[in-house]
Structures are given as C-alpha cells and as structure tokens.
Length: 189
Image (cartoon, rainbow, N blue to C red):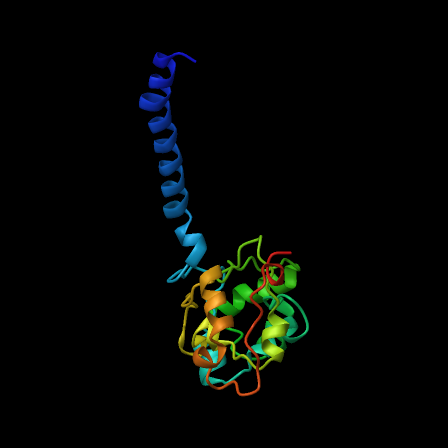
C-alpha cells in the first residue's frame, strides 16, 4: 500500500466507519428503549377492564384469571369464558360486558394488547417465581390499584440481575429463598 492510500484510509474511511458504527449503536439504543424498559406503557385494550375493581375492591386472586401462572412459563390472559363465569349473571347490561358477551358468543378470542414483555431472546418462567413465593406486585406493581394496567418495572437484563443478586434486599418478605441464578444460560436458552 502506498502512503497516499494509507493516509486516505486513516483520514477518511476509518473516521467514516467509526461514525457509522456510533450512529447505528446510538439509534438502536434510543429507538429500542421503549421495548427494553417499557416503564409507563399503558395501552388501550379492546375491553376496558379494571384491575382496581376486580383485584382490588372484589379481591379476586390473580391466579383465578391468570390460571397457568403457577404451572407454566406464561401467565396467560383469560379467555372470554373465564370472564363469563361471573358475567353471565353479573352486570350483563354494562357496555363493556356486552362487548365481552359478543366475543364469547362469537367464539372469537379477545385481542388483548400485551403490556409486560420480556425480549424474545430471554427465557422467563412465571411458575418458578410464583412457586418461590414472589408476589405478583414485585414485578407488575400494585395492579389492584390500577383501573388501566401500566408497566411499572423494567424487564431489562440489568433489572432481572439486580433482583437475582439482591433478592433479600429487593424482596424482604422472602425468608427462605436463595439468590436467583446469574449464569447466562438460565435466561438465554
């Protein structure tokens, strides 16, 4: 290589490549921030459902509706049939219950908008956490006070590792639980 081509490489190409890399990283970082931490995310749902009424005032346990949370990886949202266990009798004339009944009668699934999401490349199992005695509110906040559910905690790797490393500080109500695993393959499978 001649001196002029090395000079061109160092003065023009290298700074240009570094600039593109930094801009790509910055754009990716800032544009994906909402997906990474999601705090404050509060989407509209197809049916206005009040956790404040159901979990708060009526004291219905989370697991009545989110049935698989203690048995499987996902908490799942309830099918219209679960809601109809009560609403085939209770408050049938309310507009939102009429919508619910229409979904139920048509056999169509309610297209709930997901609020809490762990990235696809990370493995999370609700049942492990629930069966260790970790309260739903530790990650999801006090949904029993929310008319419209909002994401209140970050579901980033840093947030999860912070809890795994400091479980007794973060969750002082847990007495006989070890710290969570920190090895990569616990979450990246």
